Length: 278
Image 1 (tube, rainbow, N blue to C red):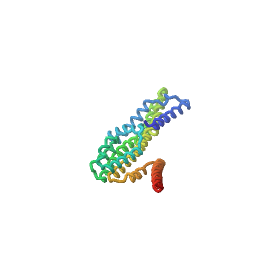
Image 2 (cartoon, one colour):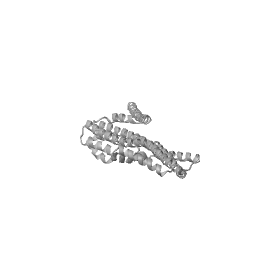
Image 3 (cartoon, rainbow, N blue to C red):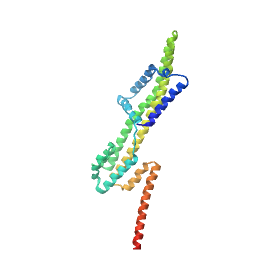
Image 4 (cartoon, rainbow, N blue to C red):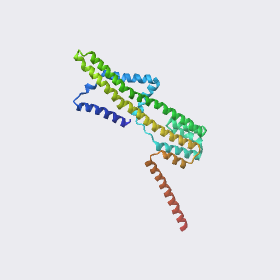
């Protein structure tokens, strides 16, 4: 679960309710079912008019990206690619077939299968790039639905406010009905603006952010698998893939390798000196 999303929603709603309470208001004054129906129904309807049903359903299912805690293990991916590169260098590309069962990511698994089947490296790159582009396009469409909802909701809220004022004007002779009409008028605007800026637009931006992370991870896989298919030296491949890591982690990996090389050099020098003394 994405803790930041939960904290953000709780903090946003809590701040509004808390501010309302501090001003002396009560929760019931902003709990208007009529205003909610107008704003949410109108916004959903507008989104359905703009998009196909499949895209709208995809937008709803994409909320899993908003609330789900997706962890992308870039270092783990690089390590797996390098392990495969070492296996293929020693035993050949066909030996990778035995490693397919250990790969959980369907995209990664598909790429390795293409290599095992003897697919040209250029074709592997093209096939995987097309799949990444298709996935990105689909998810971006889902994010655009929420962006559209963020644009429609405030306008529908104003529409609800106008309807409430019309109701007020129709009942000027009956003071007992004025309060309800005015409440709907103002609360509908609150619902429209609040839903757009606290939920719909943040949902769209978080989907885009997580999609960018997924695309970056898949680009690492593509580069690694293409290098593996071309028979690149594992050490050179490691240097290329680690360029995707954050600078702090990249520096740490470089220091570890430097330390390993220095230790190896010291052992060689010590052995040479020992031989000379004998």
